[in-house]
Length: 335
Image (cartoon, rainbow, N blue to C red; front, side, top):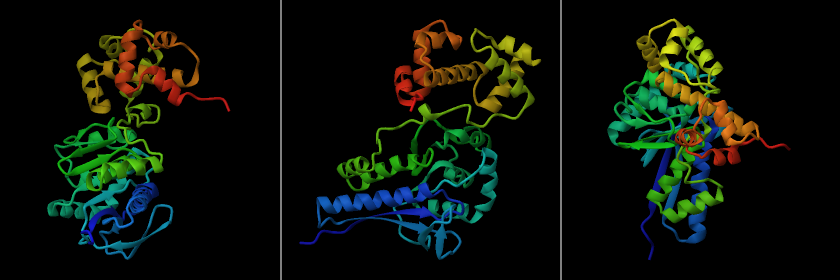
C-alpha cells in the first residue's frame, strides 16, 4: 500500500547580490538528505525540495558571482518556510545602503508574513526582515561584525549577536552564511526526523551542536565607531590594558564628564566603558593564546588582571570556550 506523500518545501529568495553559499548550501543539504532518506527507505514518502522565489517576476536568477541557479517561482508557490540569503557587501555601511535596492523583496516579506509563511534569514538577510518591521520587539541575530550597524538602525530589535540561530514567533535569523546550515538541520529534524538530520550532518561534516558565534567574534575585524571621542578612548584603553582603570580616569583623559562618557559608550558600543574594556582584554588574551606559548597566568597579567580564576570565567563567558580550548582550536600552527 502506498504511503501518503510527505512534502517539505524551502523557498529561497532570489535576491540580487545574494551570496552563493546562502542559497546553494540549503539546496545541497536537502538534496543530500533526500538521497539518504531514499537509501534508508527506497519507498520513502518524504519529498524534500528547494525553490527559488522572486519578487520581481523574473524567470531565472544568478547569484552575486554570476552562477545560474535555476528558474524562479511565483511567491504564490506553496512554501513551508522562506529563507532570505545574505548579500555581498563591503562594509557595515554598505550593507545598510544596499537595502534601498530591495524594496520589492521587503514588500514581499511583509506579504508572506501576513499569509502566515514562516520566514528565516541568513547572515545580513536579517536586515531585510528588520527593514520590513518583522523583527520589532523580537529576539534576533545576524553576522557578528554587523552588530553595531544593526543595533543603531533597529533599536526595537532584541539583538543577541553571540547566538548562531534565533527563532522567535515564526521568524528565524542566523549568523554568517554557514550558520544557516545549522538551521536547516533543525528543520530536517522537525519536519522529517532527527535521525535523518543527524545522518545528513555527518555526511556533510557539520557540527549540529555549534550554538554560538562568540568564539569567532573579533573586535579587530568588527566595525569601529568613527568619532573623535571613541578614537581617543580606544587608544587610551588599548595602551593601558595592562593595569586597573576607572571611568573617572578615562573621562578625564578624554576631556569629558563621566555621564557623557557613559552615554557615548552606550550609543556607539552598546556597552559601558568597563564592559568594553573587558571585551578588549579578552581580545588581547585571544590574540596571545593564538600566537604565543605564554602560560595563561602570564597572559592574564598582560591583560591587566591579577586573578587568573576570575579572568578565566570572564573569558569563557565572552567566548563560550575555556582558554585552553580556545588555544587548541585557534592557535596558529607552523607548517
